[in-house]
Length: 146
Image 1: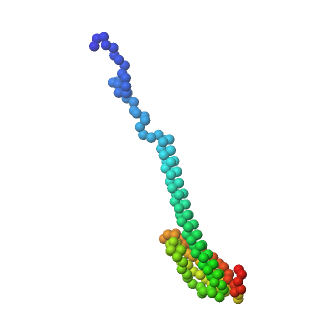
Image 2: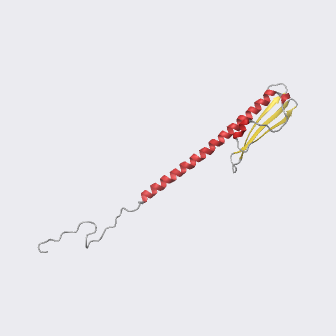
Image 3: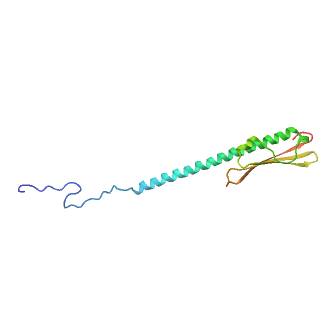
């Protein structure tokens, strides 16, 4: 090899040189932190949405219970003092949408010319949820009014 010059080594794996380790493998700390932040944010938003679904269901059930109780109160008031039934339960087709519901109507003497009517509706949204109730009260007199 007379007359040949030795060429400097080029590239990553040149003979006699130290090899470089690829420093671009894996994730940086910033990438990991951003990923954790995004996953956490998605989790929080999911929990908020789930909570709103429960709240909307509760509001729907409460609105149904109020509508049934109000209809019963108006029915009893329109019948007048002499047509008031005794205390007890009643039924309404709208109660089919309330799970585990029960209704009661309590009629007591308020004074000699007035009766107090209390309509109560109770329901439980699911097996582990607390008992919810709506109660409306009115007075019915012998002579009208109220």
